[in-house]
Length: 239
Ligand SMILES: [Zn+2]
Ligand SMILES: [Zn+2]
Image (tube, rainbow, N blue to C red; front, side, top):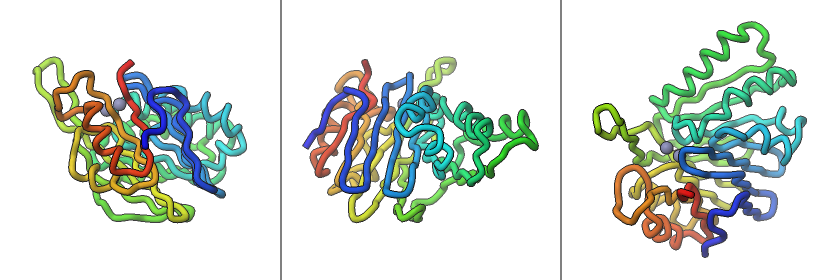
């Protein structure tokens, strides 16, 4: 069952497990908050994430954020990382922060290195970079997280070619409810498998027309996967 289409924020809640998609607009920004009874996770902190988090959960809860999950390094998914890291330093965060990202995603390492260089010994909290080059499930704060590879390419204007971007989707399972987030992806079997029977599938339909390619899914492709989940959101639809 499709929930809503392209009207932000999108929210979904089952018992103590909820997700709020502040926005997901291709080439502009994504920002997602995942909540359980005792934790706040961020998924794809694009530009504007700090403003949205401040309004939604306030400073104290922002300071308690323990984990950030990155699907890939495109700016519309990580544009808010710098301001988030800096804000946490300014507000004197003490608990560690883990950042999960696909192996080979150089953007996160570069932002981290620049942040360390600029603020050197005045960073109040530990940042743990977790580069993911596997599909093994792991647990954080009672949430089972399973990364899976997806196919996402980008266009290089200068040589008129496309290239594969390191990209992951994730499933998050908590108290028997599973959310599947595909990130940016073309239609691929890993996404089909992981979205199937999930309680909520968040699927991008970022392709502007109905001719399939290897960058984004068409509306028809995204819907066909969404129909295999209990509920689904279509996101990243061009405006
Ligand atoms: Zn994107
Ligand atoms: Zn992308």
